[in-house]
Every structure is written in structure tokens, then in C-alpha cells.
Length: 590
Image 1: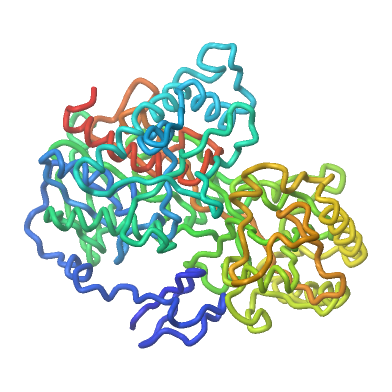
Image 2: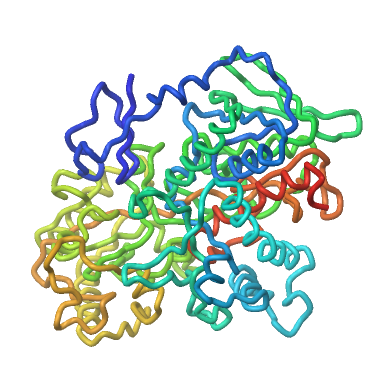
């Protein structure tokens, strides 16, 4: 059976042809792409290859893994790439494809100064806010924590220069809708100093393709295929092979129900995903649920279990790169993408079950999502367990098709709740929640939701008219105005409107209709796992690496802990440590 993926929301349709309209987001059939029908990719699923030995065994096929494989082949090392899915690219393929690189060559070419002191101060302050002190050694961090951040500053820039030099891709700065380099996600912190140009991406023939993650994977694969890389799909690695000294010398993979051994002469690197789709690990390590997001369904934390068996030290297991997820989109398609990254409109807000705003809706997705975890010690509840994204016709019509706004008629979208007025919307939300009882337990609206929502909208509208959000300061930072807000998608509309003081806010229509989407706390992926050193080696303890075993990407503990420094804060470290791991395995980094 053929599978078709909606490039707008990630919905997977099975059938001979794509649907005329996506049942999740309303996108037209031309927005669907065919999966698992590429002859070149299908030919990789040949399990009769005799060769089971190489210098480097790479596990996975996202940015971390392909960065490692490319570096290995460029250094004349033989490589076998093992991917457990039947398609390549992992979660990277679903991403925007940006990578966050301080002091990169694009900045230098644009005369943007990005000193080590500035970059490290920003990373340390954002990642370790309770420890950061610029007057203490290591900025108040532990020696290991500081070394990992410093190493990233030193090595990430040369990494992208390396890939340019060997002809994989050229890197360019990511610009906002006004033609300026994007700011970082916490550019309002004084330690950030408003330094631009750290978020970059791989240049393609079509710079406006809107498919950055797919483009990045395509560029890596094109280079690898031109160099006759051995890539095998349908190979799930379930264990590693050790010698009598405890060093890793290979892996065991399940292939068509059978086990096969692959031997690595110089090293094994896991460049796989986190454990977003492993309910057992989530329940054991996460106090709060992660409901949906954009991680591919094969991200089940295999490397956590494998590494534990050989004594790896785990870190950051309670954290994730977070994003609000459209609950009912996730429930309809658990393997697809249900993420809401940026709320780009102006006439919208988020409220909790009391009908009250609880967050600046324009903040970045990772930080914004954490508002779901606020505990009320008096009422003994999480009042923001689920939130409601509420918008009007202006937001819908101006930014139609940019999630979470549907690409079609909202009345035909199962995850969108429609109300002619506040009372009707409240009634419809109550009905929807009641129908979801088996999924959300006893969560329900409070009795004064409708009254409070009216008051909330009136208060927000007053803020919008005056241009000042006295509750959450929406629209007061460059990030909110230039990254999380952009011009409407329909032509010939004057925006900002003549009566608009703050382009991040506009009064909601006082008469309706109104639309609501239930939001849940989700993730791009988890970012905990075995700890690594500055070469990507897996650690038994801080000074004792497991020889022959390396890791990069979301399968290892993030050195940034819970911070999302800017667009590409996952892919940048993934590629850097994939690259460094090979250089170390080859004896080129010591």
C-alpha cells in the first residue's frame, strides 16, 4: 500500500493516490508527497550484502548520523550506515533544517562579531540560569558543563566550513521576513547582546523551498551516494559487541526477524533519536506527559537501553526540546507531526481551563510549552494541563495554512472547535472535552470559563489597541516582532493595519465567530541519554569513556540541558558531535 505524507501537518495517508484534501489540516492534494517509493531508496533494502565489516558503523540517518558518515568517507574510512526505519532522514527530515552555529563563517563574511565570551555567556546563562555567575570560574558552571559549551563554540564553526570544503553544502544565514538575520530565541537576555546570524542553513537551488530539513538530508545523501556509501534501511540495532576489555567493536542488528553482526574496526557511532515514542521510558523519567510533537515514530530510545547495559552514565533524562502539540491532530495520527512552533498571527490568544491567559503566546515553542507544568499548590492541580488556542477570522484568513491555522475550511477540520460567539464556543469546547474523556481523564472547563474568556478577550483587546501587553509583554522583543510575527500570506492587504500599534497584537473580533484548538505539552524529541565528552565518546563516568562507542543527536544528553539557544539548537550540536566523533575515531582529534 502506498503512503503519502502531507507536507503541511505530517499526516500519513495510505492509498493508491493522495486524498483530495488532508483530513487533518485541509491542505490540497498537491501538498502530499509519496513515501517509500523511491527506487534508489528501495534498492537499499537488500539484506543479502556479504560485507558486514567497516571502519565505522553509523546507526541512524538524521543529521547526526549523516554528518558522521560523510566525515568518515571524506577521511577514507569505510562506512556502513544502519537505519531501522524504511525511510531515511529521521526527525531531521521533519524539521526546519536550521542549525545554530556561533561565530560561523557567514557571520564573519557579514562583519558580525561573535566572540567566545559573548557566546558562552549567553549559552551558560540560558542553559544554567540558577548557576550562571560571570564573576566565578567557568561562569559558575561545573568544569564539565563549561567545557562542553566551550567545545561547541570552538568546533561547530569549523564543522560547517569542513562540509563546505568537501562539497557537501554551503551554509547561508537565515533571514527573517524583513530581510534581517534572525535573532536568537532569548535575544532579550542581556548576555545575548543581540548578536545576529547564528541560525544558518544549507544552501539549495531553491532557497525558498520551505523544506529545510528535507533539503539538508537530501544534500547529505546526494554526497554520500556519489561516494558509494553503504546505506541499509530496515536494520534495527539492538545491542553492541564488546571485546574482552569492554571496548565496543560492533553492533547486532535485527534484519527481517534475524540477527546480524556488524564489526567496526575503528568505532560505532549512534546518531539516532530520543525516546519520545517509548511510553515506558517517558513514564519512568518524565513527571509530565509529552503528548505528540514531531519526532518520527522510530524514536523509541533504543540507545538508552543499549548503553545502560554496558554501564554508560545517563544524563538529562527528564528534559526534552518542547513544543505545544495539537492534541486532536496527535490523537488522529500519532505518528505524524502535531507541533505548533510559532503563532504568527496577531488576533489570537491562549487560555487555560479558567478562560484566562497564562503566557506570552509569542515566546519560543520550547519555553512557552513549559507553562503547562505549573502546579497550583492550593487547588492541587495543573491548571494549564491543556490550553486553548483561540483565534478569529482575521487570523484565519491572513495566515491560513501556517500551523496551527488550517489550510481549508475550519468547519471541516476535526481538531478545530467552532463557535459563533463566546457562549457557543464554550459549549462546543465542553462537548469536545467530554468526548475525549477516555484520553484526557477528568480534565474539564471551570464553570466561569465563558465569563472569564469574555473578560480576557476584552482585556487583551484593550492591550492591543494601546500596543502594550501589561500582563505578558507580548510584542516587546525583537524575537516576537521579527521571528514569531510575519506579514499575512494573502496579497494586497495592508499590514500592520493603520490602527495597529503593536504588530504582535490586534483586537479579536468582538462578535465572533471564534475558533479553538486544544493544545497539549509535546516535544520535538527528548534530549537525554548517555553522556558524551567533547569528542562524542560515551562516558562511563566523567573521565572514563567507553572506547569505540560514540553518540550524537537527541539520543545523547544535551549539553544545553533545557535551553533552546536559537533556531537549529538541536541540529547544530547533532552535526558537530557526529563530525567530531569520526575525527576522534580516526585519530585526527585527541
